[in-house]
Amino acid sequence: MVPTALIYSEFYNNRGGLGVIQYNEADAKVMIEDVTAKNNALSGMYLSGTGITVNNANIRDNDVAGLVIGNNIENEITLAGDVSITNNVNGFLTLPAAQGTVRVTGNLISNRNVVGLLPLSDNFTIAVGGSYSGKSGKSGSGSLTACDNNLYDIQNAGPSTFEGSDYTCDTAVPPGADLPVCKPCHPGCPSPEPDESSFQILSAAFEINEVDFADHMDHGEIPV
Image 1: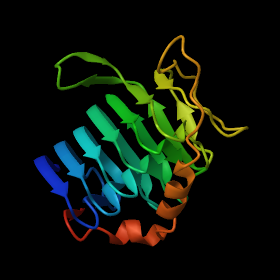
Image 2 (image 1 turned 90 degrees about the vertical axis):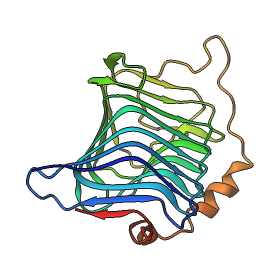
Image 3 (image 1 turned 60 degrees about the horizontal axis):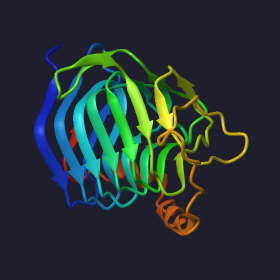
């Protein structure tokens, strides 16, 4: 089957940015490459289903979340190349009924959000590792970086499962959080305390009903 491809596209100033739902059709593939998703009222990118690959993306300045992994469908999603998520309320967000795995085979960078990564599902895996070729043309193993976020770099609220070893994160986390072992963002410096003024911003973001994420794709929807 020939994959659906979305290359060199921009999704901005909408209620929602780019949305892809892939309904588990055998061997169906979706490739998203060199996409910018910014300044949307809900999320920059919403992904749900199998056979989805994002290769290089810039997701920034979205009001609720940068990248959302959706509910109720088994997810098999690959983040390859350089995927940058910055200046959103939630950087990387999985909804509570999300299932399956996101595999990070490139560089996933979720910096300068209110929360860098917020997995809400207890039936979900984030697996870091594998080969990739980023914009630099260099090959290497996957990595996940979450640094300089206002509240938490990673808040594992599901809790979800983290696999792999190349993680970089810093800020303090709630007690009992099941987190990956991280290299420090700023070696030799103490971890910063959470910016408590950001709690109100985070709380307002979660007044959005979960259904709104699935329904937000009034621009750029790809039902496959």
